[in-house]
Image (cartoon, rainbow, N blue to C red; front, side, top):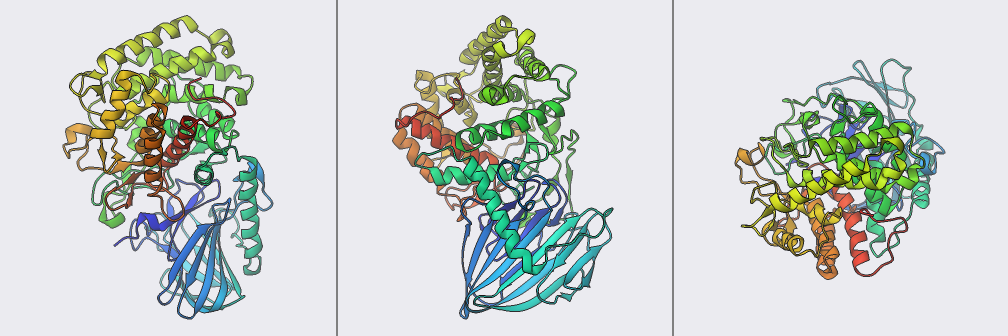
Length: 616
């Protein structure tokens, strides 16, 4: 059996991420970027590499993020004593505040500290670059080990002698109360000199410096002061940890192919920057912590699209974290998958889909951060205007929808609503768009979209707004209508839709995206999926806006309660077992938590956010 997804915690350094489980095993790590081939991939196959520091006998575990950080502290208690393991992806030494994540050293730091008695540990280092394909030549060195050959250099320092195995290194040690033992692993490309890991005696200081770096970032970005303060702060740190600092890209999750159901085919690579996810991440950071990422994100998206959003532009729904356009999807047949859930995919074919919602998400982000962006550069003015013009021209087309369905294109209601958002925000931005503003034509087309949605999006049979024009299927994306200001939540038809979703599109009160019957005609895929954490938070937000804060809070508490012991949420939840599914941790889920917390606070009469609301 694979390790439960909920048993993992995320480490991050502003360029990449690693997952460590409750037993002290690093089972997933991609260096030097989020989307680099994994060095450790036991997450997806027991033979695909790991680095474990685990007590030899039976033990109890407690763990936490050190306050204000993404540094994990795991305390093991055994029959003979207790010891603490601290794990961190290092940031540049002395880095503080908004600079967090720039120029990371691509180094994993691990420290064992004896607390009581003695604890015996097994150290098992099994590097398997390129998703487990490579069994590297590994040689012991003075004070550690290093690999040779292939597209990576990996060097390790250890305070105890290592024994070489077949493409692995091992050790057994005892740590006594008061003793500290530091380990380090550093990555470098093959064309540079061999990398030098941090010496064991300096690991404590480097972890402490990384802790202070994270705390300095949080101290500068602690905006939200409501009753869900700790949850919002943690979610904000997670979103910061999913940001590729060199470009401003924000990944949807740091993993690939964690399935939506055991054994299913709905296994996707989320290590890329979706316009939708990134713009919603900015909105959550706006409520929860940080305004600074907006400038980097707008620059990343504008430059990735070639500064244009028109007919000849290279605007896509998603990009690589460096701005790459070609994210061709392929299968890794040598990997078994988490709990034998094949296929394991890298790349994502959705990059070539038509998704009309992205115009609204981008323009909403530009509008939300209009003051932070200052005087808009002429190329940003033109880009914003082309986004609006393209939404006005294309809103009548069918598309794959925001859920990236792989069946036939449809007239998805959410895509139409987001095109309305694009034009609505463009009209409000018009005074800042100079000669590019076309207020009258944008206003006219915005009103046409609204009329079409109100007429063709309503299902008489369901007595609710449906998934697509002239259909009767429900879709949680209809909850975006009040959240983006298309209709107030207490509008008669909108409120009926909220109640229909709460009644008919839930399992144990948790919201599904839409009903999957196993029929590929629904979305081009077989199998089912679990409840979507984001959609459940959307329902909580909509209930709050509709004047039901107690119901909203009860649902919020239920969804947030499925987070693991570190406070992390995956994409989906099995509400019956409480097990987490899908890629992890998921930006969407933490976005939903932050925005729902803000909506519930406002429904209870809390002062409005110090900046503005999403639909202002």
